[in-house]
Image 1: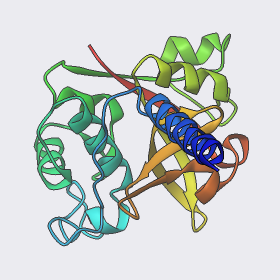
Image 2: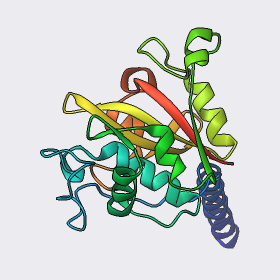
Image 3: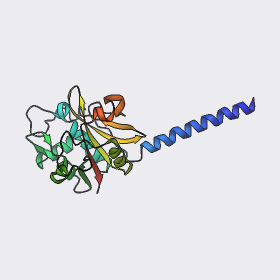
Image 4: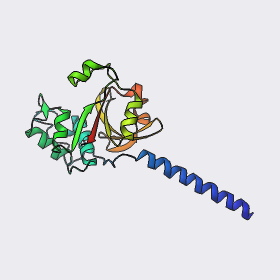
Length: 206
């Protein structure tokens, strides 16, 4: 009887250790705060200088970048970053976020670049990206392993949406989603990487 209890206790300890180890692996990068673009604090603020779009309705890219920059130690929130970008040339055509300029708010402490399909020299030269230029999931995972954060373009209700990929365990990708203001996995909410992701870019500490 006592031996059976010891075996059961040992099994529980091993299970907990395995769970903790798995969690630690997923948290190898910086701790990423969650922000909800629909928070009452800023959801009704105009996005950039647009007269229609607000942070709540169209600020997923802004909110995703806010999470990234905050993870690297830059004290901000979607409302504050939106105001900085509006007055510092951070938007194109009123409310289209300029990704590099969003990183510029950190005064050089955070940098940005696209993730490209290896060998796509034309995109690498222009620092641009097109729909054929989706990096493999293995490249995203290697960036996460290096402590970097990835902003990925997905589809939400058929429209363009952006989430932050914060880490992974195996091929399961963990995300912070600005529309819901929560943490989940890419696969659980949007499907497999190849089905869900349309583009990817990386932010990292300089």
